[in-house]
Image (tube, rainbow, N blue to C red; front, side):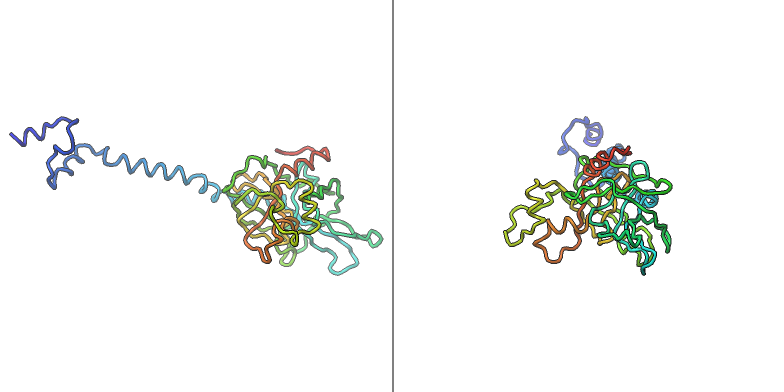
Length: 295
């Protein structure tokens, strides 16, 4: 009688009413197999959904970088009678109609000698002897270290500019440029980066001894925000586009010199940190020159 009563126990009965025998749990699991697997299946589904954005960005970067590379150019000067004839200064990338290139203002060669036919050039990479095209400066924003150039010849593949206000800390990004210049040929290299923080360009709370004229100017002109990246860039990377690893849309421009001179004045040997100017300032410069822009 007891066995019959136990087998017919209503489903709403308390767990304490169940017999504590070794086979009881197995019997219940056999009668209700979906209950046993439902929790683990849900946990696996949630884990997969959580991992999808990061995995997608990581898997997409090789294809994204391949699309980005044709838009990457070197910036330098050319003079036929000197050795070497071409001097590399930094990186830039095509925007707008493909006849324009954005780079850092500090990348532009100084004191060109027109008497000796020294010219500003954009270098189209991918070869040991890159193609050099003459360029002209059409707009400058020295306060944010940006320059817009007009390039001769056939249009380049222009990159799409994103709204830098929509980027989030922790987002997977990448940048492509020429970290070692022309030492090994002009081949663009791609580096992964994470947006670590959005910070003001000039650090507050520094001592008077650490101030220099550039920092004072930045503080006087109301410091704007910049992107601090968990990545390492080299001088040749200045002017590289900072873009979303999955979509290739540009959120900023790498700056390896100008920003470090203001923000890291108190750090003797900074490493593993890179900065970028947000794309909103690139858009402003392009619109100032009245050039159509892909967004």
